[in-house]
Image 1 (cartoon, helix red, strand yellow):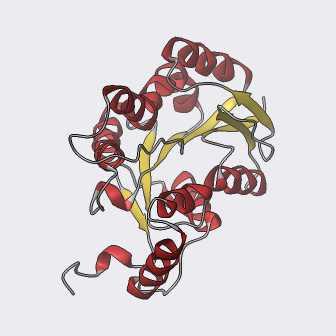
Image 2 (cartoon, rainbow, N blue to C red):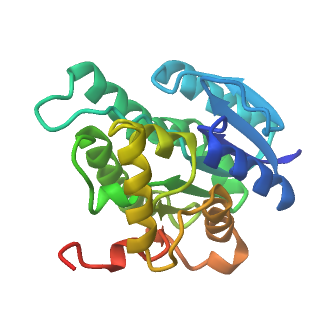
Length: 241
């Protein structure tokens, strides 16, 4: 059977880069997203909040492919602060950002274990140090790191579980986040972000895809339960500096 990787959130900027990198690495990419994923070898339009459908989908994929990895990249980011986030927004953020990967694993665990597989999640620096107005997103990204540590114990030794912690990556989601301050303020904030990042630039989707590829690969065979920070050195700097 064909060796494959499931990629959630495959239609976005990082998702597209992940599909392209998996193809370079010799894997068949199965993209899961609400929107079509042109970069994926197979594009499945699925709502990750529909858990029953997601379990069945995972089982179907596991029967049809040698599953090497699941890369959980999908996320929603409600623009609302503490005490202002609606219950519907909280539910969506928790279901998509955290619970969906556990549901996918429940339908694919045996295939992953049989193929020396791994799970890699895409977290965020906002799970560690954040900004105002994205309370649910920051909370769920912190929770995702807890899931990685726990799942590494539960799924080992057959399946490794790790994650990447991107900083600012040049995607539509980043631009959307900056847009809430208005165009002029957004450009000013981008300039400040670049200045306060050790590598003096905003990251590219391929930077994240490369880190995911490493964690899936043979060179990371003794790494599990870990989060690899891919932020250009942004959180190495004291916020008070």
